[in-house]
Length: 447
Ligand SMILES: [Zn+2]
Image (cartoon, rainbow, N blue to C red; front, side, top):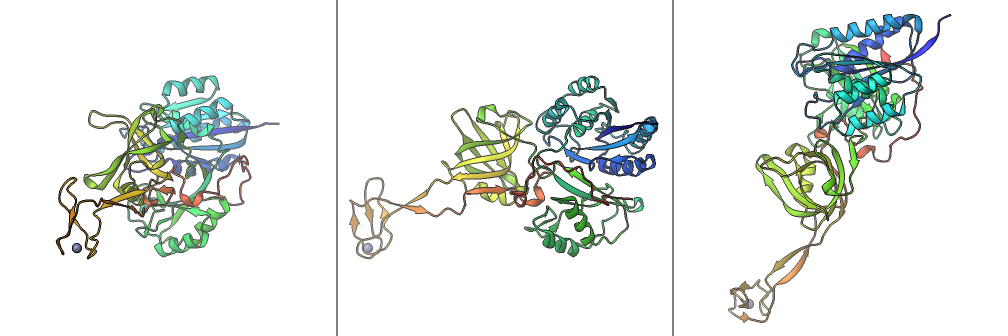
């Protein structure tokens, strides 16, 4: 008699700017594990970590596979996983620091869950990760700086018990890697229309651009994000690829959940490299710097900081431009360190407008005889009518309330510039909590 055990395999940072993709390695490993008759106990986890880590790979995503296996195959499973990982990691590329972690545990320890949440919001050191690997009797392997071990361990600890989403990723046949992707764009717009609001970030309606197909040399043909495994599976059937799909997998993910954002009470408590939600009053009129980036200042009783809406944020930049001193807002974004030329700055993902200050405009009064707008004769000198020549020394400037073009409420960066973790507007009200769905749908990967 042999016994059944539970294993979690974490993977991170195997891709480089020249191609490859850690999700693809996970997809290959899923197929390989079938040879050992494992039973997956959850969808593979696609975990996006703190997007503000200075040395991150492009998407800063880590992966985790969880399965029940026969103890008899333990060594073979590990060897097969390591062999695939070595083969598919861009070890020789500078800035690629692959990591793989194995943890044999029925239940994920609380301490590891805390560690994972930290990697989503802050900076975590390799030393911290290695201390935890040792304590939990996990096994970790790394190349180059070995920083990938941090993400690999974090992916295991993120059990997605709060909010989560799904992504089905379809991969290209190897002979097409690096070539232009061929997918029927109209079918993507159709799918988006058909499955709303249960899928998100398929297309950017402002520019009418498809955003589920990446641009780089990586093996991904497209990825559809949604609220349930059934939805993304249905979406896959509606999209018409015009080139062969080698394989596809449904991942469970923290994408689109704002997992990276943390509420901070006061402006003087925000830390560089973290992403925050913080309230303040607009204290500096918006100004535009070259390349059409919009900046403004906010303050509270503790400090004053700058906020930046960069050009690609699209609509959000337009919102920022319309703010005036005195508006009460809540900003969402990544905190950037102060430099010699710039104070501490929040790079905006969202602005929640809490209260708009009435905008006033002062104008010269109208002539009492002919109703023409009067001209000022100088400070405290009164007004003169250019048409009839009459003078009015006792009249004062009139104040008008100017209608604001902004509406209170949440304003979010355009779809095309949203981070993987940014919760899009369409997801508000669809958040999940408490109920972890381990039940896998019938067909969640191919082959
Ligand atoms: Zn007049």
